[in-house]
Length: 193
Image (cartoon, rainbow, N blue to C red; front, top):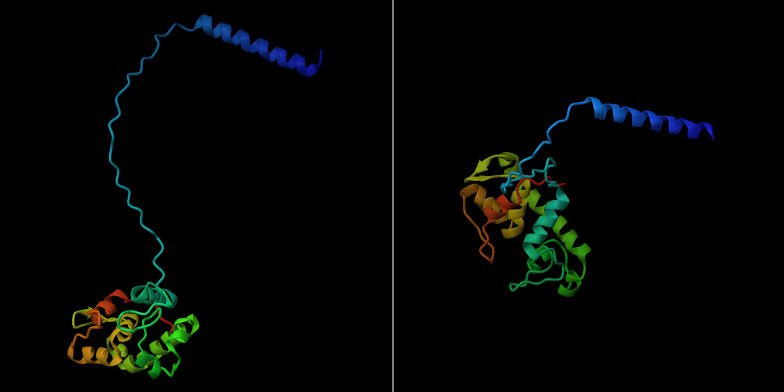
């Protein structure tokens, strides 16, 4: 017999002896009876909170405006003739020196993004003094931010937003959306302007 086999047999024999001795020397115990308790359903409310803040950068702002205006569709024209992802009118495009056909504009996401970039820049220049004075403050019951103000200017024009700052005059677009709605919905984005 091999040495390893002898060791295994020896260990087995010791194990049997210990088991037999334990069985003979320990007193007999009554078996333990476990009562079964019917389970009652419980209701647990779990609330999951994200530890990461929502990213509200320039790209997120453009996506939010595009979604609100057109569902982020570049080729859409609404019933009033406003076009593309950001719903530009012909007069606004002309003021931005974008003189192309409707078809060209609708088929060029690049041109639409360029138009939005130009419009944001121009509106910022027009409203800069109001933003320096009121950014982060409440005016006419509305918390003012750069992104909310520029969104409102996109909706009704920088002139109407200036009038709102001076007099509280509430302008609306053709669909009846108030400029203050845009100021609230698009507040607190970090814009690259």
